[in-house]
Image 1: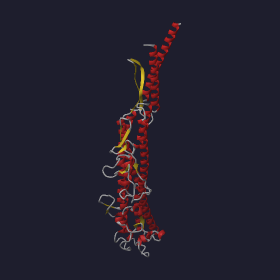
Image 2: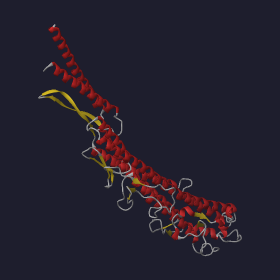
Image 3: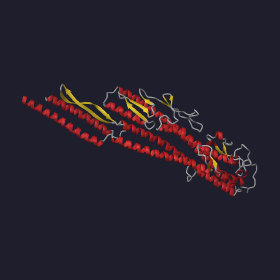
Length: 487
């Protein structure tokens, strides 16, 4: 081997070692960077004629376990969907309140019943009558507040859908731009690896909202699909369409056409039925809260309001009112109509006949809502009848409740139980998906940058660098010796 070929081999080794050190240092620096794939420098033997002539850098390879990453992303979408549903169930449970909480629905009903009993025991006492009216008003306010809270949650979900759609569209556009850059980038280069990292980071922005499947074609460009087969990114980025609602009320629904659905490149997506679009991710869960869980909760509260009002509208309970006139609880001042039940919980109102600030008088709670003058102050028969109406076992006719008889207190308790059951079931699902996600994430991290391994590689690189440097030094000494001999 000539001295010149020796120098060439050693210089190629130094170049390779320097590139390896650069790649390893990049790995260590990005050990905690999401979406970063471990780099490895690929080298091949350099040939000059039939003789070896050192080493040549073939490129930089980015390592990633695509299958494991895909499984982790699917688990992340499921976990996000479960978390959204649990959060809604918790807020609904808080709105209804447990019996031991001040201002809860059960507590308000109990207070109203207790105040009626106190008034019945002292029907001549204006203070107890006033207390009963105030308790009735507090109960109505609580039912109104729960209804308003449910619509706020639906509007919150609608707003979150709008934000998610904007974020997804932005990420898809970014992925399409990166695909174009990948086509014009040399394969197995450092720039290619950086572009793939950027794509992985953008995919992570979409993954919690939509369960994803991905693949790369022979050109290295990324193609993205939803788990149920909708194309999101191919030769171009698809665009999701959605219009946020300015507000929300019980009459706003997808079926009524006064609220936006979801479209993909102008094609409406089906969001209901057994296989809704993008099922299993946060986006699907938000639509379920807005269009299914929220309306179901509203229907149950409307059923509570209807049940309460109809008990006091019962024929013969108040002999002073005419047929068709409302009892103690009204639909914004009129008698409750079963055919107009939607949103009743938000419209429920105490009859103005017993509200002094609206021209009424508290003694009508004792003498009858349409009484024109006070009756015998010791007569508690109407008060006792109202107490009996609250405790009567009636069949709940709407709201999705089972066909059994309940008192008002029993109906409120079952309403809370359904919300609690939804929360408990959701928490069990969330726990399972969180554990699965944690296991997959741990496995994914284990396949990522191992700083201990990278430091060991640096030691080997240092040794290789020193060996090649020593070869050059020896070659220099040989040349110096030859020059000395020639003189």
